[in-house]
Amino acid sequence: MTKIKLYSMAYQDRSDRVRWLMEEIGLPYENIFLSTTPDYKISDSDYKLINPMNRVPAIVDGTTTLYESGAICLYLADKYAYGKFSPVLDSPHRAQYLKWMVSSVGTYEAVIARLFTHMKTDLEKFQTREYAAHQASIWKKELLPLLSNQEYILPTGFSVCDIMMAAIIGNHEAPGYEFVAKGHPAIEAYIDRLTKREAAKRAKVFGE
Ligand SMILES: N[C@@H](CCC(=O)N[C@@H](CS)C(=O)NCC(=O)O)C(=O)O
Image (cartoon, rainbow, N blue to C red; front, side, top):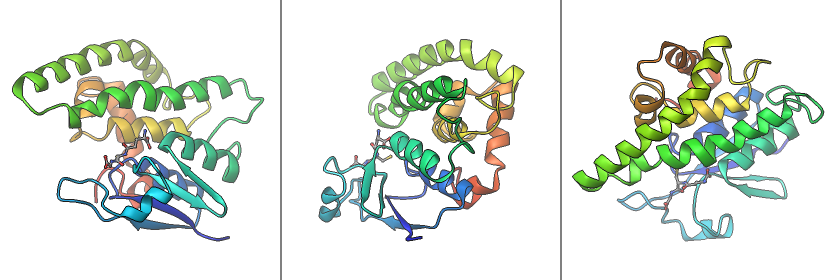
């Protein structure tokens, strides 16, 4: 099988979840790290041919070019590990799986990413942190009972939802962890469980 090309800027950008999933599946892949400007923007002009929005990650898998980390994970899980890290189409868990895959990026990451980007002045920092704390308090109404009763997001066990969620919340050094996991033993234990996975370590999701 031809190696899948994975475009990113570094191990710990949003390519992390794609790399982690490929490691879990055991897919052959090639890391292509793009050149960046000092303020960490993609400076490789040819890359716009892969993703006209100039964002990472993107993959090239034979004749398929795809960007958006959630879409890439949905695609890879179904194509290369059908039913192993995602419930099959007629599974009663498929609907919840899709919900978590979409909410991980659309709900969680949309807020957690602001803890990196919307922090320029003291006022902005304050407002961003207030907003994140409020959103996290809403998320925890669902997450806390869920992870107090089961080890993973889906009752069927480890899945791509966990890759998305753990990569987005991050480990104890990450801003997302502070708002979502810290002080909640069930969520802390969940993240701890995931950071110990060998595939996550090989993909350097939580650091070198
Ligand atoms: N929703 C997109 C977000 C992609 C995104 O914003 N990626 C960042 C890196 S984590 C990026 O490419 N930044 C480069 C830039 O802003 O120039 C995804 O999940 O793939």
